[in-house]
Length: 624
Ligand code: F6R
Image 1 (cartoon, rainbow, N blue to C red):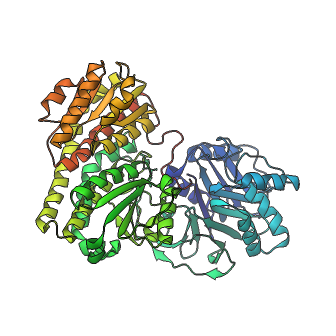
Image 2 (cartoon, rainbow, N blue to C red):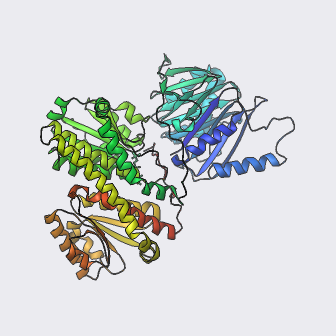
Image 3 (tube, rainbow, N blue to C red):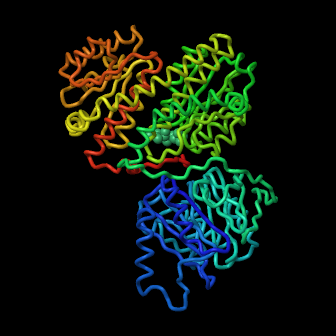
C-alpha cells in the first residue's frame, strides 16, 4: 500500500525522507510527495504522479525555475518534514491525488497509509460547513477535520477529537504552521514505528526507512498517537492517557544489496532460492532451542493438538495449502487452510486443541493481521510464520517462526514462498517428532531432502534456461489464455504458478484441480488455450493425472507438462515437457518452483512488463 516517512531533528531532512521513501517504494509507487516546515516556519511541499524518481525530477525542476521566492518562503527543506509514496485506493493516480493533502489554507499537511472508510460522509459535512476540497482522496478529510479542531483545542485534544471521527485503518503523519515544531503521528491498524536516535526522531511505516540511522525502535501500539517535538516524544492512547511503549533494538537490518547484476529483483530472488532453503534448514536445526522458545508452544500442547489451521493471503495461502499435506502426511494432524479475507467474515467457531499458523511474508497484510486479532481475542493459540522479524504479526501472535528468505523486493513472491514451504516441512517433522511418530533420524533425513530439493530447483533452471529463453517463452508469450491443472499437492502449486503468470505477465489463467475438468472446464479445451499440467509423484494420483492429460489431448488441447523422469506415458503426451528427478513426493512442488517462476519471468520479459512492480499491485497489502 502506501508508505509514510517523517523526521524531527536538527538536520535538513528532505534527502533523508526521500531516501527512506525509496526504500519503502515496494509498498506502493504510483505517486509521491513531500512537505516540510521550512526555515521561515512556512509549510512547503511538492507532490507528483509517479515514484521517487519523478519526485526528485520535479523538485530539481522547481528549484531551477523561478518559483523559489527570494524571501525563502518556498524553500523546500526543513528540520521537520513528512513524505509519502502512494498506491491509489480512492482517486486515480494524479498530481492532485498524490499526498500530502492540505486544509483550506494550505497550512496543514497530512500523509496517510490506509483507508478512511467513512470519508464520504465526513467530506459532505465538511463541504456543507464551507471546506473546499481539491482531491478525490479519502485522506483530504483528515486535513480539514484537523483544521477545525486546532482552531479551538490544544494539539493533543485536537488529535483525539479527529480520531473519534475517523473509521477505518490509518497511519497518519501531520504537520502544521500553527505548531511548526510538532510532528504528529497517529496509528490505527496500519503499521507505524518511531526510530529514536540521539538527536533526532524518525517515523515510518516500516523500520527499513531508517535502519541505517538508528536501531532503537518504538512500535506504536494500535490506536495510539505521538506528538514529536525535537527529540521529545509523548505517546498517548485513544483515551488521551500517556503511555510508554518500550524502545526495542531492531535486529532485522536488511540493507539493499541491489540487483547484483540481474536485470530484475525477481530474477535475482529466483536464483536465491537454493540458498534460502539451505539457510532455512541451517537456521532451524542450528537454533532449535531459541526457535522453540519463539514458537512458545510446549511439547505437551503439541502432543495434544487435534487440528492445525493455516491462514494467509495470495502466495502465503498457497504455501498453507501445500503445508496441509505436510501436516496430514507427516504429523498426522487434521489440517485446513483458510483465506484470511474470507475467514474474517465467516461465522467464527472457536476450535479446541487447535493451533492456528498465520503465514505471511510481510507480517503486515491487513486481512491476515485482522484474522490473527480475531483469534487472539478468543484466546486461540496462534503462531506467525513470517519473514519480517519486526512485523506486527510477529509481535502480536503468541509465538512466531521466522522464515529465512532475507529481504524480498520484487512484488511477486518467489523466495519467500520457498522459505515458507521449507519451514512448514520442517515444522511438520517437529510436530511428528513431538507426537512420537518419527525419530531424530527422520528429521535429519528431512533436512537432507530439502537440500536435495534446493539443488534440483536450481539445476532445473540451468537445464532448461537456454531453451526457455530461445524457443519456449517466445512461443507461449503470444497466447492470451492458459489453463493450469494440478491434483492433490500439485493443485495448490498450480494455483501459485498461475498467480505468478497473472500478476507479472498479465495473462489470464484459469486454474483447476484436474479432477474437475469433466465437470465443466473441459468445454474450454482447444488448441488456442495451452493447458499446463503439474504432475505428482504419488502413483495413484499420477495415474489420475495421466487420465486427465489424455482428456485434454483427445480434445485437441495443447499440453505443457511438468513431470518426473519415470513418468514416460505422461511425457509422451506432452507438446512441451519439463522433466525433474524423483524426490520425496511431498517436495514435488518445491523442486518445480524455480523453473515455473523462470518460465513465467521470461514470458513477462518478452511482453515488456514492469516485472518487479506489476501494475496495481504492492508488496505489502496493509489495507483490506
Ligand atoms: C504474490 C504475492 C501476494 C502475497 C500476498 C500476501 O506473488 O506476493 O499474493 O503473497 O499479498 O502477502 P504476505 O505474505 O506478505 O502476507
